[in-house]
Length: 303
Image (cartoon, rainbow, N blue to C red; front, top):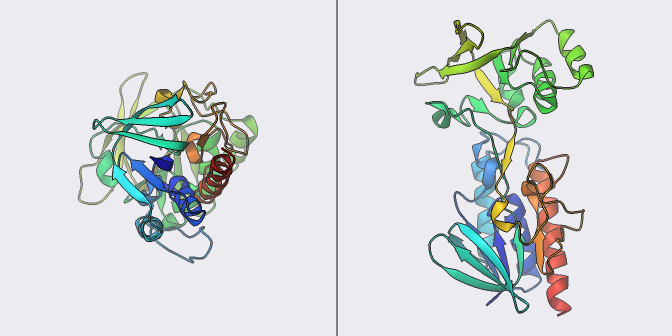
């Protein structure tokens, strides 16, 4: 039996593992995909303390190496259920494994909602991005499209407009849903063109990302847009449903906890983008991991 099992190998989970191992707790990390989480898709990270510039995949590799050097165990498996049995936590995986621990930290993140178009996955991190804060600087004086019309999308578009030559804001509805104040800011930007009632129909099938075809929903009219990059801001998708028996979810499906990262189930903690919060950055995920691990260690020590 492990002291702590961590569900998710993104920045929050990896940071939690480091703190738990430094407290001399045995740790197992279960990750269903690639270690590092969403950060691995960023070609360059320039807002993480200690590094002027580093690729997302390199930062993820450093985090994983640190965890392994500290002595944590890792397995690539998909967690399907966690049970609270007689004071211990039983973790089951899709691969048929069962693990036990005194405490569990759920740090399974949240994935960006994709458009679901051919070629999309191929260009993610190389022409298609989900974070203007992370990647907007790479498109200075270039032409980009921002897909979405909510608050997050408009904030991203405003940021992009400060450095890009041209920004298309493309919304599937006939109106933007973001705050009026944000819309007013965009309207004053001469390099921003808002296109409503329009969807992205195709992503150009070229060796490098070169543009998209958009389609008006009213009449099916199609237009090709030559682009240097595209930012998608149509929401995040939490995948917390399997753990609803342990931790309360809010209306959007995120774990509804305070800054202690504790849940209503003793010995179960949550960290990172799967948790209800206003800012989702690698630095805030790291902070959650530290908080969750320290509280999990304290919980174990008091048993």
